[in-house]
Image (tube, rainbow, N blue to C red; front, side, top):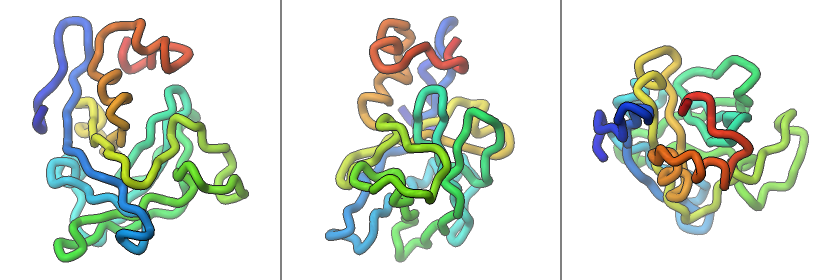
Length: 172
């Protein structure tokens, strides 16, 4: 799928695939960073040095990248924004350590990070967003694993109940 392409029919929501990138490891990049693909930067209205906010959606446990902090009970913000790198830096952003599977639980976030949100160095993440996520303020996108991406574009309720307690509200 390309930016603007959607997995839409009369039953399923419109999804936009905004690119894929691999999470770096400290041993290969000096930090745990991910390149934000051009379609994702365009959809979120991001330029080099702009702040990027990290959060997760508590109902379904998807990792979220945003151009502003998110509000509402269903979002848990990481706290401090990171800066988007420039072209020589390959437009990378640091993924906060609290989202990594090997992070020790601490007091840096009030809500424990669900296992579904955890990130592993070396894994691919798909940047995806529904039309509404990039048409309203603040613009946001999900960073999904391959499996989460496959589930997100599926209209089959059975796939959702395998992974989540309920089918997410935005897919109803």
